[in-house]
Each structure stands twice: as C-alpha cells, then as structure tokens.
Length: 328
Image 1: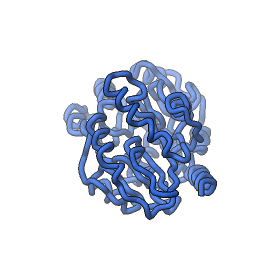
Image 2: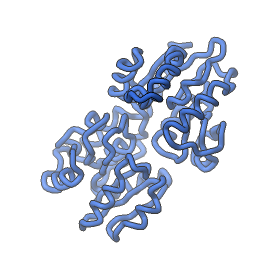
Image 3: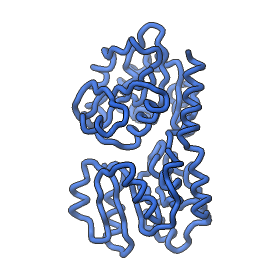
Image 4: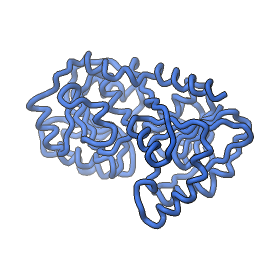
C-alpha cells in the first residue's frame, strides 16, 4: 500500500495526516514535490519524486499534469491519493485508488478560461478513483456538488491523548505563515495590546513577522511536536484567523489541550467551534478578541478536551482500515 501526496514544503497539517496514514496503515509514503528538509522531519522516511519547491496554483497544476501520469507505482495494490495533483496518476492493472480529498480544486469554483480548460482535462480523472473520502462534511458536500460523487467523511487524525489540559495564559496561534492564513493581521493586532501572543509556524512571512513584532509577540518559527505541546499546555487561548479552512488540525490540538478557540467564521471551522461554548466565532478579529475577553466561554477545560476526542487517531485508523478492507 502507498500514500501518494502531492506536495509538502514544510511540515504542517497535511504532512502530519500523511505521516499518520503511513504509520497507522503501514503504507509507504511518496511525495511529489518536496524537499529533503521536510523528509527529515517525517517519521516515515518518505520517497520524494521531485526535490523542488513549486508554489502557485497554475504553476504546480501544470507540473502535476506533466509528471504524475508517468509515476510508476505498479507494485502497490492500493494507492491512497492526497492532494488534487495526484489525481493525474494513472492506476495500473487492478490497482485500487482511494482518494482522500482535502479540498476541491479551485478551478471548479471559478469560471475563467483556464478554469474551464482544467475542468475539461480533469473530467476523466474523476472516474479513476474507486472510493472518495472527504476530510470534512463541507468537503463531502463539494465532492457531491462539483464531481457528482458520494464520499465518506473521515476527519484528519489528531493524537488527542498526547496533549494535556492546563489552564495557562496568553494567546497562541499555530499556522503556516502565508498570506491566506491571516497571521500578519493577528500580529499587528497584538502589537498594539498588552496581552502576549505566541506565533508558531514557518513560511514565507517568517522574517517579516519577526521584524514587525513587538516585545509581547513571540515568533518561534518551526518547533518540534514536543515543544508545540508545551506551548499549547502553557497557553490560554488559541486564535485562528484563516476564514476558509476545509479542516483545521491546530484548533483540535488546542482543544485537546483544554484551550478555547477564537476563530474566524468560515469554512469548516463552525463545525469545530461552538460559539460561546468552546470558543468564539468572529467576523472581525478585534471584535472576536474583545468579546472573548469580556464574556469568556461556557465550557470548562475538561469539556473542551471532550469536544476534541472524535478526531482521535484511533477513529481515523479504524475507518480507513475498514474502507481498505471493503475495497480489496
């Protein structure tokens, strides 16, 4: 069995899901576009097909069309695909394809000339999967609406047992440091306040955020899993400012640590955060933080931990093992 993952340029949520598939299912990990640095952080010794960083939707889409159809994986009975670029892979013989969908390609949501061409080219690939699995209810609905396929929902795994609840202080955000994640806005907001903020993650904005942050804002860069657990255990509130998460792993890890989550309303997040109970949902970051500081949340740390437990590794593994056994 193999897991074919489109791309990983840092060790974030996507790679943690892929690592869990490898470890829990005994599958080999093959990554299309990645770097040796990412491979070293993985616990599964992944095979990298093309040791390069290819960012940007159009650029990577073109590279994926040109390269994935020629990938040779005929030695595997089952291939789990992760990332839309891998859908160009052509199954060999009786090989079973389980397509784990994190989000629908952007070309299905937009209507430009290149989007229309992309949809035409992708149409045959829709039928090459034996089974569709979605990472959230929202993604499952999109698979039905855009691809006309049924899917089963399996939430990405979080090792909830590895975290411990402790009432700490300060605000924490964990994210890839890119424009779409909204981390700059969080840093700029806390720059003008007295509360402390810890920003965990790496990405293109790292140096900029380090340069603009005030004394109450700590930018850690990438940290180990153990260090991340310590930061969550010592923190008081988690902040999520990305409004279009198909599924956020970091908020679940925060909840497993007993932390309320103050999050931008959008994407799958409202399914994770129950407004006023285990967190606050906001349209405006400033309003969300001020509301939390004035009202707090109803749930105790123990109740917040309980909310995270349906995303456990045990549930994830059992569901995938069942699907694989049904297909073979």
